[in-house]
Length: 309
Image 1 (cartoon, rainbow, N blue to C red):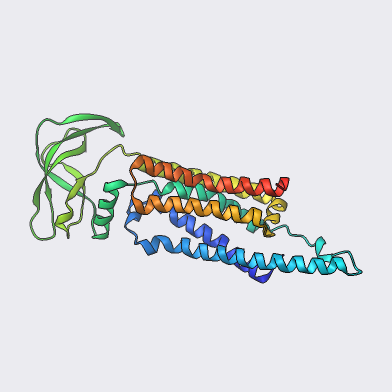
Image 2 (tube, rainbow, N blue to C red):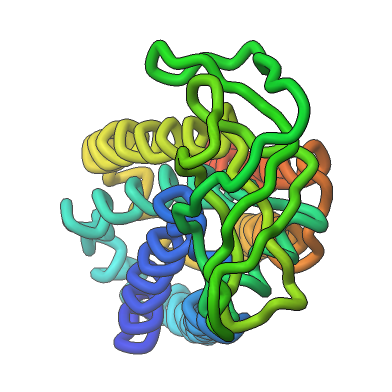
């Protein structure tokens, strides 16, 4: 049932899915990805969705035409259909890319939960979009007695205390800013430097001190590692099982429509993580649920194809 339209839309969908997944990994690479505009983050997904719908439509039309053609062959005197002997096994490149796409799907879904979330996430996005970022500022005064937090970073104790910081706002001389909790490596003293996030052009946004020991950086690294390992494994598995993969080219409503619904559900859950700014626990729960949908889609397709259920 392969036609020019199904091949074209199929390749566009596969390439679009890979681009969308790599683009979605940005939060795991750089927390500044939250500053991207909504159109910038959504465009690859929208393009891929249009291509996927185009493939479903083209494949459905091709399926109807194939059924009509086979019915004519069956009724004719020549009962043997020469097209039945035509190989439908995909090339190694297509099978490998599909394996990579299936592996990157869960990792890109998990990547959406990396970084700031909730109210902190919304504030971070506003600061970054205002041209702000993480800067090094000087401690003007340490208020109270610093205490250990119990966190160790590269054999350095993390300390916490209220402090007065000299913040260089863009409207003139550095201003003194008092924060209830500022963390430093080693015991803080006036004149030391600390990391502070703020937008120098927007005083109303305020500033927040950097917190050590956050799991987002470690989680992002592990997500990238798992994505790389999964991509290698997925590509090798599908290349060796190209005959089974080739059967997916023939559109079957009972196979492809539930698969499309599962993948759409996963994308919708991740969009909630990206745009609803849920609390940390809920965000990770939604991302984990989204990460399961590619595996569920594969299991459904294999069950239908191999056992004809």
